Image (cartoon, rainbow, N blue to C red; front, side, top):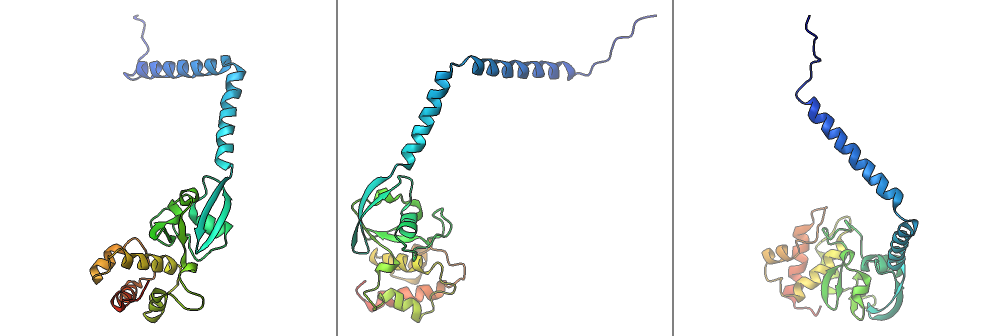
Length: 213
């Protein structure tokens, strides 16, 4: 009687070869790690620690914020937004998305609007920063602030500081010549309450009034 041979599926041999290759790879990696001199491992750890320490080491920073000169010590990784809110207690500038998508953190740096959540504090060295707290003159509101109140350009108010800072810049940049242009150049500032028509009206009034901003 003829001896019966074991039946094998077509993929069995391929699976066996694949498993063998995986085993050899893992064995090679373990062997390489085992024979790596301890001094090399420690050197790598040391470099890593040095990199972490460098990122946390504070640097001197001199700038002007709302007309007041500041001499500060900041970590290189700190954003301008966190510097303003956490170190200087200027909490009018809001942290919304923290990804540069909502515009709530808009401030002026040397007269240009910037997203402070995407701007490292050290990048403002020697520059003039203006936040929402620096717009009014004493008890007298800035024309844009007064216009927002008059036209109900806000509801919850969370996005309002960024909206106002961007609106002032929009006029200074020459991008407030029509409602359509205002909507285009204010599109980076999100209002989840949907007060856009009133915001546009406020900007148009300031623009047409020709007030000094």
